[in-house]
Every structure is written in C-alpha cells, then in structure tokens.
Amino acid sequence: MILLNRLMQIGKFLPNLLFVVMLTSCVNSSGGVFVSNNKITLAEQYPNVHFEQEVMIARIHQMLIIGQLSKAERASLHFERGVLYDSLGLWGLARYDFTQTLALRPKTAAVYNYLGLYSLLDEDYDSALEAFNVVFELDPDYEYSYLNRGLDFYYTARYNLAQRDFLAFYNADQTDPYRVLWLYLNELKFKPNEAKQNLVQRAKQLSTEYWGTSIVQYYLGNLSEQDLLDKAQQFVDPASPQYAEVLTETYFYLAKQKLNIGNVSEAETLFKLAMANQVYNFVEYRFALFELAKLKNMESSEQTDVVARKK
Image 1 (spheres, rainbow, N blue to C red):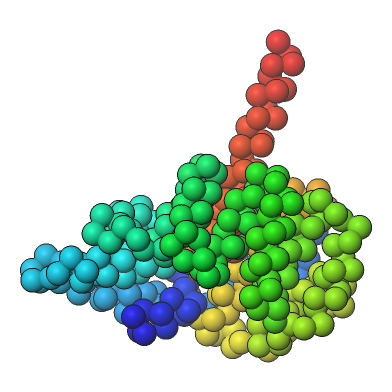
Image 2: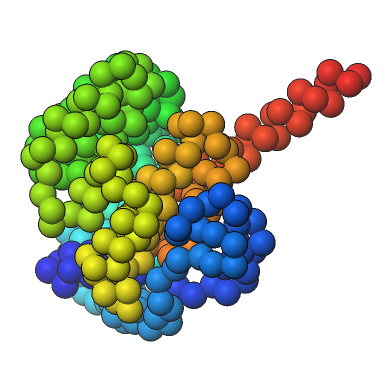
C-alpha cells in the first residue's frame, strides 16, 4: 500500500496527438498566455509513466487467479487493483473491483467514496449522496467525502448544504488552497458579495507548498496569467511528470473562472485542456470531463428549444 499511495501521487500523462490537434483547431485568440493562436501549453509526453501501475495490476491479477487467499486478502487485492485502475482512467474496471471488494468486505468506507464519486460523475446525484452518507456512517472522519458530497450539493444547486461540507473540508486543513477555491466557487453562487472578501482572508493562511496557492493569488488579481505561467515553470520542472498535474489544475480553475463570467467558449476549451494531460485521478480531471458533459447537454437543450420554437 505504501508503494500504491506513492504511485497515486505521481503525475500522469498519456500522449494523445489526435486530441491535441483537435484542441488546436478550437483555440481562441483571446485565450491568454496558456492558450493563444498556434500555441498550447502542455506537459511533456511520457509513454512509460504508467509502467509500474501496469506491472502491479498484472501481479494482482495473477494472485487473484492462482493464490490461496482468505476473504480479507482477496478484498484487499480487489481494492488495490481498483485504485490502480482508477488512476489509469479505467473507471469501469475500477468500479467492478470496488463492487467485488464490497461483496467480500461490505464495510469499506473508501469503496463507497469511490462508487459515490462515479455515480456523481454519471449525474446520478441521489445514488452518489447515498454512497457518501454511508461513508460517514462507517467512518465519520473520512475527510475527502466532505469534498465529494459538497460537490454533489454544488452541482445540484444546493449551495447552502455544499457550504456546510466544503467548510468541514476546509477546516480540516486551512493551508490547502484547493479547499479554499471550492469554498469560493460555491460562495459565488449564493453569497457573491462575501465570496471575494472571504477568499482574501482565507488566502492568508495558505501554504506555498501547494501550486494552488498561486491559482488563488491569480483569482485575487495579484498575479497575471503570464505570472501564473512563469510561476508554474518555476514551481516544477516543465520536463517532469508533475508539470502535467500543475497544468491540469491550472486549466480547470481558469475554466471555472471563465464559466462564471459567462465565457462558455473559452471555458470549454480550457476544460478540454485540463483533460489533455490525462491526470485521471485528480478531481480537476474528473470534473473537467463532468463540466464538458453538462455544457454539451446544455447546448443540446438549447438547440432543441430553438427547433421547437420554429415549429
């Protein structure tokens, strides 16, 4: 599990040239420093970055087939393989392994957290909420379910309930800028007059060890987009896998900012770029995909309304 946890923190980047070419065709000239005509800032490509995870999956598979295992051991192996599949973006296979874990060990809080997250990404909000509530029944201190349940409430416009969970998540670590960013994004929806001032106050306690602290400073207007790009290249080596993580986070929160001011076209491009580095197990990757699905559904609904009016 120590190796597994370490692997889960490593930046992931799988090259996808066709996807990048398609993105290039939709880049807007007003996209700013990260995105401009004939230029997209992306991380280096590392074809073998998933090698260790793939080897571990193969070993677990062999153990499950031929090993003389107890029920508890089998449950642990299914869970570990599920986490590895999740980190590779193979969410269907991950879901299978997590359900196998529950069949063998029903009271596994982490599994309900993953399954709740998948339900949320499928827009099955009720099932997601039920799963996150089970997490708290099994483990009241399971920190990240506050974030995930808060996201369920946020995306169903129950902002006061989201605030409760985002605050609980924030209070568990007030130095983490990502907790501050989600509080800010939520407060913009139901008490916008207080959101900016709260962000100013919370920013004072943030740790510079997190890249997200620079994103908060950008939100506050203390950094330009050029400053943000320069800092990103100083924060981690652009030739390292960790640069993909930095860009995934940056593009997602830039996209949320564009969406909040009504610039849907740029937001859509930035969400796609948040996915381009394919850091599958980051919340920013997952919800960039989710946001794009919502934008597509919104566009389809608008087109349907136009057709209906013409009739």
